[in-house]
Length: 135
Image (cartoon, rainbow, N blue to C red; front, side, top):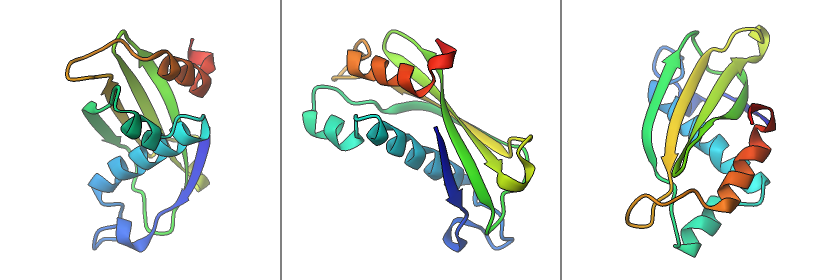
């Protein structure tokens, strides 16, 4: 799934470049949007209270500048599914340079209910829908 975003003024630093922490905010917003589009909104998980999916690791690679006004195509892919965790890879491509990933974020999420639990079936099913070509 591709999500399109335009970089807004409040997302950049004084040099007009995407503030580094906002890359994580964008990645997480896209994660929430995808979860909702596949029928498992984060709100439903929070309200259910039988498990949660916190991020236990996050990393980013900044390869090209992302500037105020840039139009991005953001893709979220499942990188790995484990017993109690999954890893998402979010890639940011500036529209005028489609061949090059300007930045990417990798997040590791774990299913917990006071301690790690196996990934719920509904989450595994959703992850396979997001990136069926990976599995």
